[in-house]
Length: 359
Image (cartoon, rainbow, N blue to C red; front, top):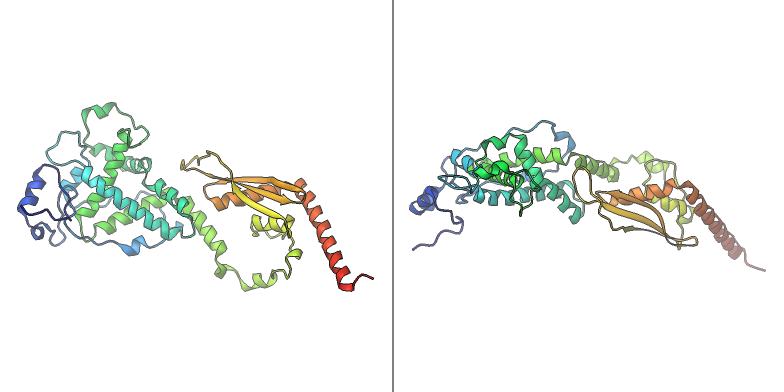
């Protein structure tokens, strides 16, 4: 018996399996843009929209309206996407389509997060991706589009609640997320030429709404750090100090809190460090774990002195907040500023004595 081509995964028993056994690969290929094979079979090439996947998100492109659902060209594939394996059926369930859709969504999220947040750590990027592809997010999309009315479920599902969406629970929320993934794959598989493009454009619009605030924060950070956005006059008005000893805190509100703290109490031999603080805080909106960062001082008679703490989804932002908290403690800052001033005066006096010689 001839071996099954590697590009066609084994199908479950049903009409589509019989068709595969009697048709050659060429005959099973979609012709002139017609629908592809049933049950999530990958026996055809499709066009990946690399340009769309490689374009960073911008806040200006995100609409508050739900994007329209892409069309699935194959009615049988569309029906399969909403068919639970435990429901009475003649054809296949959503399982194979869900398997493909899960991988497609993971790939799309990875690409778009990577190009939008290039300066974000791998760990934080994984958190953002998890926010987009987790079951609670996908099941929420499923319900927003009213897909629950199209789901073909076993009779006992009528008594099941949404649950937590964990894989081991097999609850309604998990099933809705699986069907959403299957629906995404059905869009791709039913139209080899335009399915990927339509599916990615749709999910990009949906995901953009979910992480809108993260995109806006990223734009502010990138804009602030982009040297092309700084005017030449601003550079001339604030030239860099010739000597770090003379660095003084500026009144400019654009100065980063970490730089301002270092300028306020820092000096040679004085260590100002930022370290993670263990904790279990999570973001109230996204449910993602948050970084807790403390700023510590070693110097001015202190050792491992905690000056302030900050909490945020981004580690750098948490560090910034920690520096802000330290600067807000005016009473403590005055103590260290006075010690720094006395130290600097002693250094200058010693330099002047050395320059003139000691008789």
